[in-house]
Length: 362
Image 1: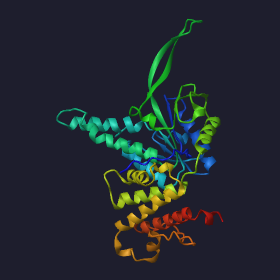
Image 2 (image 1 turned 90 degrees about the vertical axis):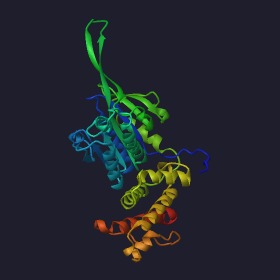
Image 3 (image 1 turned 45 degrees about the vertical axis):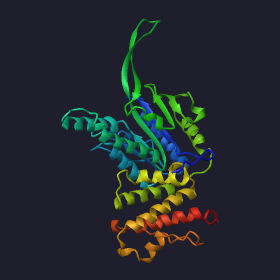
C-alpha cells in the first residue's frame, strides 16, 4: 500500500491522561475531579472502571459517575472487554482506576507469564511472552481507540528514602514513587502523564499540551482540567461521540459474527488508516460515517440471510445517502436475536446526518 503523504492538520483530540502515584497520593480523587469536569464540559456520561475494590464509589457523594468493577480477573483482555462495554454504552469520559492490575494483578500479564513458564519444560518465560504480549498490545490499542476522553491511574513503584534536616539534625523517612507499575514505556502512549506525590502535588513528566510543559501543580483540580480542555478543543472538528459509539457497536457486532485474530476494533483502525491515512480519533464526521457504512455493509453479508428481505433491515443495511429524508428512527432496543437490524437502523441515522449536515442544522 502506497504511503499517504498529506498536509499536517491540528485536530481536536480526545484526551489520554495518565496519573502515576504511590498509595495515598490522591490518584483516584484527582481522576474523578478531572473526569467530572471534562464530562460536564462536553455534556456526556462519565464512567469509572474500578479495579481497586470499590475505592472510587467511596467518593460517590462528591462526584457524579457510573461505575463497573473488575474483580474476578485483571487480564489485559478483561480490560479490553470492559473498555468495549463502556464504549458501546456511549460514555464520553472514562476513568480507569487503575491500570496497574493488568500488569501485576490476578491473571495480569506477569501472572500469566509465570504460569505459562512453570508449565513449560524449560521453565523459561521467554516463550511465555509470545502468548501474553499480544494481549497487552490489544489493551494498548483499546486504550488509544476508546471513543471518548480517558483518564487512567497507575501505581508507582515505591521506595523509602532517609532525609536529614540540616537545622534540627533529625532524620525522617519519606515515601517516594518511581516508575509506574506497568509495561515499560506505556506512559509514552498518553498525551499527558503526571506523577502525584504524597502531598497531592502533580509533576507533569510528559505532555503534548505546551501550556503544561514542566508544570508543577499543587492539588490539581479545575485549573488543570480547563488547561486540558483548552488544548483538546483547538483544531478542526473530529467525529461526534455518537458516530464513534456506533462504530464501537458495529465492531463488537462483527466480533460476534466474524471473529478475527486481531479483533474488529483493531481492524477498524486499519480501515481508518487505509482510507484516510490517519487513526480513528482523527477522522472528521463524514470520514467516520464512511467507516461506519462499510462496517454495516460487511456485517450484513455475514448475517443469516433468512431476514435479509425484510424492508426495514434492507433499507438500514443500505442507507440512501442521497435521500432528503432520514431513515426511520429505531424504537426501543429489541431482544438479542434482533440486534443486527436495530444497530443497522441506528447506524443509518448517523450516516444520514453526517451526509446531510445542512438538513440537521435546519
